Image (tube, rainbow, N blue to C red):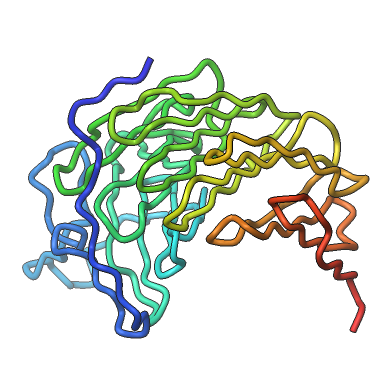
Length: 280
């Protein structure tokens, strides 16, 4: 059952037409000490440390990467590790924030940003997960705590965020929630989907959602504004990946065979373009 500790609707940063200026996050998303004893940012170096040859630093293994995803406008990407999560700016490339949960293991198997604001969706992962792998935690970094959660009977494979929706992908099912109150709006059955394949439009218009269908090589397209569902048999082999345009009008698909990329019109399902591997 979903629970909500506070309204998760965030205050968004104003858009910009100049992504090369770095688009810094708000101050609370920049690296800083935390007053919360639970999630601990990386501590600063002790200037009084004894640098004599006898002093030996304990060996700290590098973090293992568990997950990687871009935000909705591709200006940032987030990395989930076995100790927490890091956020990077793309242009110019630099680390702009990290949060480590090392005292309890802290593995984050899924981390999804909501544009450049302080709201993220987290799912535990790795050998020592920070949260149960069957829960989606809505993390508010302004408050340094989770403000909502949604639990399921099986592991969460992926999460997709919009300003108005949260989409949670399990291996055989997809759930669509309203962001403001975590009210369940829609459930979708899919073929086995261990990769958590799902794409949602990010334009100002209504939601378009794409996911695997109920048979091999099939994609399902949901147009929520017109309440229309379309099934496309995109490939003979299983779907390996797909990508949706920001406005939800175009869909590119590829199969496990890996020889073709096909581009479809999502409104009528027509094939617009086919690109074959090795062709010029």
